[in-house]
Amino acid sequence: MEKNQFSIFETELRVRPDDIDMFNHVHNSKYLDYVLAARYEQMEKFYGMPWEHFTKQGLGWVVSHVDINFKRPLLMNDLMLIRTGILNMNDKGCAVQFEIINQKTRKVASDGIFDYVLIDLNTSRGTKVTDEMIKAYSI
Image 1 (cartoon, rainbow, N blue to C red):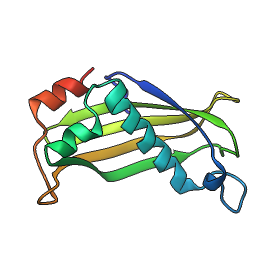
Image 2: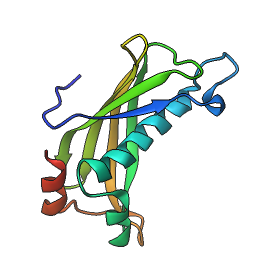
Image 3: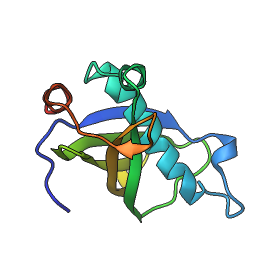
Image 4: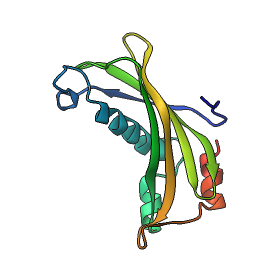
């Protein structure tokens, strides 16, 4: 995997009962939710440019592609650390690298990359990432 050149931020979450599937571990779709929840928090807390900053401007970030590796299962009540950071940015969007680490075992449960594009909420079409956004997220 490509080396992250930007800051890595961490968010702690706990596995909830409704995250568990019929095999008694976290359903694969929930890993996507964990990363999205962590990024939502981190946009405000660390970048100072929360999700709402974009929506007020009629903009939104949309996931266009995800590469995810499932390495070890997470179980009911596991505490996890979600580490994310921008891998690269361009005028159309960004790639965000992530790791989900089981706090008890200190092992990676899942990792991968989310590709995001910036869209105009009125047209649902891609739009250009501004220099202000690139500067805010390039820490």
